[in-house]
Image (cartoon, rainbow, N blue to C red; front, side):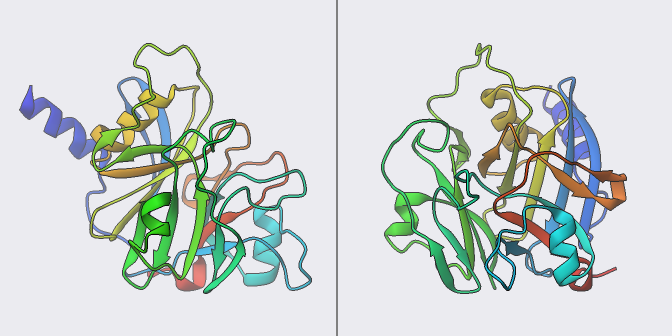
Length: 243
């Protein structure tokens, strides 16, 4: 069983280290699209508002201002006016505050967390740990719930849950070098999605980004999802990606 598990894992991981590796994978019969970034070698960026202070709302609007994207994904929950629900920090400046209290919906299902980007790489950090100064972030976006925390699944996830949705999220390695963005191509439970990050992708920490508006822009896969206008967006500019 151990050999079989390792063989299955090898099918999910990129054969060689690359700046950006987008691929379709199937794990335990469930289809996913993933884009993996070498977060120490490449510069992941967050995008929210244009120079006039208006939300970008789409991948195309980001490209119009910044040039072609190598890949992008929605990066957190937002209010009707597309203001981030929790912490949003871009280029060293907080545009929305950290939220640490429990609340309604998936965001308030504590523990939640944030995607932290810095010169050391990309890290998923629990919100209270961030508030206590666990890690400095050049840019960050908060969402919730955490899917995986220190290789443990969120304690509220049920193996027999019947709540299935298209979901997207991000997982990171302990050293910050691997940032893997994933979207399910069929409805999945939180438990299945979290296990995909931990057991399928071998990542100790992962954060849920959203469900109803989950979208991926991945030219290597011929994919440009459309739908509701977005709030925060995370992406890798083509100019910042090594060949």
